[in-house]
Image (cartoon, rainbow, N blue to C red; front, side):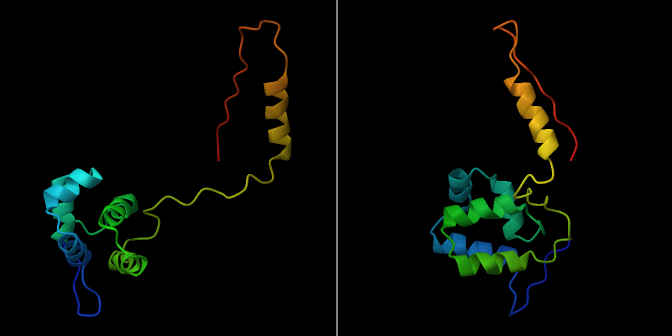
Length: 127
């Protein structure tokens, strides 16, 4: 694993995270206990052995360390060399173009059953 290069204008993710942890007066063990992330994972990030931690890991660390928004942006910039497509896309905001499918689902859910104990089950698959 190659460490993320640190430059004066762009410190590494580990350098920035370590500075916030120390400013909060926490040991790695204390931070791990508060955020539910392993000591090893935090240590690997701080030593720049993990180049692209998951976004949710950074979010939890920033939340626990109460990192201000501008510093969060710097942390995000420190990981900006992550390849495109490593994060899942955001879910669609609207379920559009599916009026007929939604109508069919609604009809199936409202269809009366002869047996009050029987449930209607509908399986939806695909994109």
